[in-house]
Image (cartoon, rainbow, N blue to C red):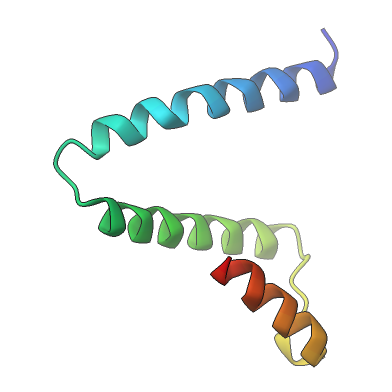
Length: 76
């Protein structure tokens, strides 16, 4: 099995197990609080990945159009 197939298998596993974990977590948590915690964890994890891969672009270099698009996508 090649590397791409292994990554695809890992992605499928993560995609399949996430709803199971959410269902377990939502047995005692309020949905909005759970979404907040999940978003917070995702933000921290993504930030760590960006810094580890040296892909962080300073926010000062973003244009107004970029800011608007990113903020709008977060609201939607």
